[in-house]
Amino acid sequence: MGPYEAGLQKRSRTKSCGEYQHSSKTFSQRRQSAPSVILSKALTKSKSVARDCTSQVSQDIFALIQSLLSPTRKLICQGNVVLQTGLQNQDRFLILFNDLLIITKAKSVMQVKQKKCVRVSEMWTASCVDEVCEASTASERSFVMGWPTYNCVATFSTSEEKDRWLPLIESCIQEEKKSDDPKMIPLKIFAKDVGNCAYAKTLFISNTDCTSDVISTALQLFGLSGGVKDYKLWVCSKQDETPYPLIGHECPYSIKMSHIRLLQQEAVTSSYSQMALFAN
Image: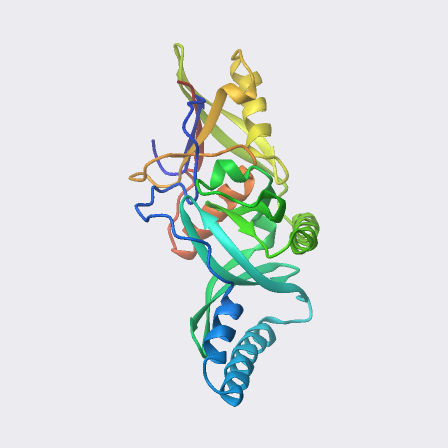
């Protein structure tokens, strides 16, 4: 497939996990959250040193927040989380603004490092934790969140914390999507390995359509039998990149728009942006 293609394919029994890349890392037990690690390390020293360490970390986070605030950007929430993909656990500290999600980690006892900056308008959430994480997960304290092209399970210290974060993130996503322009874009879909069907059609998708919505529309467009659960939508964003399957809750609009923006940032001129529909 060429750059940014996607394919609809009948579902296999294999789960789609994590960042859509196989990880060779072995499972490690869930660790303490980043600020807790910092604090426990600090407490092994004198109380005054402990206060200095936690104060320094707080100052680093405060400085990061202050550097990102603007008249149109406000702080919504911040706190500890364990992010899980496949068999990997990562202790992180989240900072949620109305339009950005900042993911940080403890670089050392005295330093916090920004790991990821995500556009809230391109995020998605879901409850399918078993589809994303192969390790055991406390589902009552967890939910799936993702962005192009990454899925992870966010696990919080309590169910109350999870119930606080999820509606805040979903509310910010809904609000930010109101500013998307355009709200409908064309998406070229290839049908492959679906009987004798091997051709492409273009359909229009909205900024709120999930993968399952797109598959449903594509099945009608191609005149294919079966239901949404019988097919998968695959994506290939580069000509030499291995296609990866979407689970069903992701937002193809966000994936394509993110790809287009990356091309623009890299000063690459290309109007070739497609997805393909596969069937086993």
